Image (cartoon, rainbow, N blue to C red; front, top):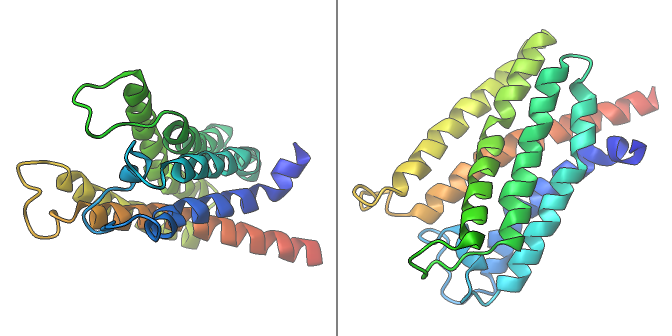
Length: 218
């Protein structure tokens, strides 16, 4: 457990980078992949040429997020156990729901009816994305409690920006309006939305790693 607390920020950073790079690296090996119009989940479809690689990669990324949970909680438990627990749960929901469940319960986009695997995948993905979205909000509240205004302001801004782009991505999924400019490129909307979800994690882990190195030197 001490090792997880010590290296958890690295697990979280590598998990975020790994998950973010997944579509771009696998896209190289996916003929006719259009990153602007195709959602990331097509990599795990039954007809995908990189299906197995995508499923394994998703599980590995999810495990990295899960391994980071003790460190995330430890960082803020003295500030607020409740908020620290919510922050850790946000990471856990994303790691398990949106990464591990994606790898273990894949879907067939051509199938008209949802089977058990599809239900688990979609519910897990939904809960995971909520955790992903709320991560900077919990950081904002925690830094507010610490009266660290600069950090709280950064995460509040990132939360609001991520909400804006998540809303655009949500609109791109609505059939009646997704033919409009920009909204007709659902893959692009999804990837930009995800970029602003990963940014708070990357900024947070980078700052924590720098802080730990400074404390070690002193």
